[in-house]
Image (cartoon, rainbow, N blue to C red; front, side, top):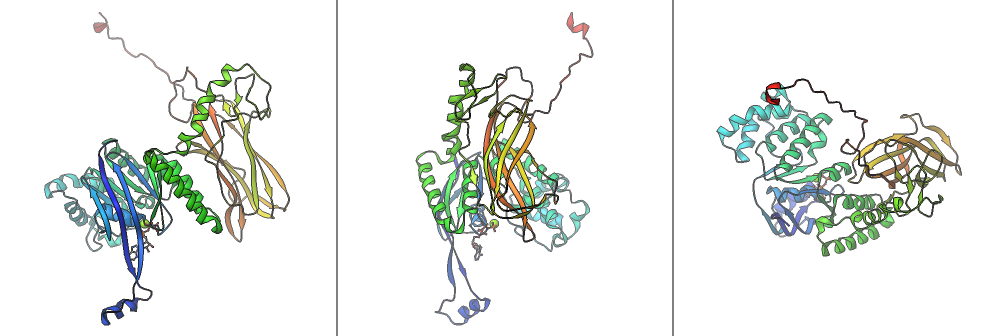
Length: 475
Ligand SMILES: Nc1ncnc2c1ncn2[C@@H]1O[C@H](COP(=O)(O)OP(=O)(O)OP(=O)(O)O)[C@@H](O)[C@H]1O
Ligand SMILES: [Mg+2]
């Protein structure tokens, strides 16, 4: 493993909290008596991050994510433990830090840049680029307190990343900007990653974490519950937040056990899928071509005449079943147009994704949904059975529906996962009555005559034309 750039050893952070503001005053006036409550925001956290690594940090509100980032960024001191950070850190912490609201944007750029270690001359040469990146126009000469939160973040991000930091710490902040600006920020983060920078990233977005981070940690009430691959950590985080209240403690305990298994290996590499389903997929991949055509059944391997196949072992190991609120999704799977089960697909052909839904309670404004994702969790595309607010008006208890989504397989060879969900209105709120993450998976067959790249097959048609012949060079 490469050099450790951030090392956090047995960090704990204690905050003193008061029930009433007056208690703080009483304590000052009546020394010797304490009105404060001890509160441990971080409990004995240890973490080593190699140079060039991108680490995601997830956890519920109040679990200690920002506290941990502030300690690593050096703006907060731990109550106990040791932090070692090597290199220049640029931190984009929760809104409000770093900028002085009374100063103009321009003054803050210089003020903040000096704090980040830039000289006046360096700042003068970088100022135009920072201003342009922020896209805030004339507001640059207005006091920062007049900025919208989006403008504030744009400028703060532009300044923080202008120093080419060794370590970039981003706390949630990017969710404030609009999508085009977010895209630009992610591109800048990718630049920093490409130059070997180390990135720490707090986000509540599962797809951002799985897409951007090499690994992730899950914090829970100040405890580091799990460290492992982004996908594993996200799936366990979802297990934890969607567990019924009576189950939370046992889910927490099983995650702790998983973490112990992980720490025996390299925790940064632990991944449910690499441990289980990928091995199964790889060992069974050769099988369809080796086996002669057998009759199709859902329980044995079947190769259809067309070359598609159903491989029994090609099933997700990472399925997350959300709590049911009056409906249950069952039997998710793919079939050919003629109804044969299939999970080894041919590129550009049409298939049907189906599942059944049992309603145990009456439901109103019901909609069914699906989503296709890559192995890293990136959402590629999905559909809803009805447009927004136009779902099935009412479904009685005891009803069973079969839901089918026919799609053309415009995907490159590789493995993909499917979600399934039933959405309805309950007490004037739209909620999932039931939802399965990684409900099914499929593999698109490898092909040798392929020019397309990446995940989605846009049916791109390349054309090459020679426009000039260099006679002189030809001779
Ligand atoms: N200065 C402080 N004084 C007292 N308690 C604090 C202080 N800062 C944080 N806390 C408490 O520490 C706990 C962890 O806070 P932290 O801000 O690190 O959580 P978080 O995971 O970043 O949450 P969020 O997702 O809401 O941003 C919370 O319960 C919070 O109330
Ligand atoms: Mg926070």
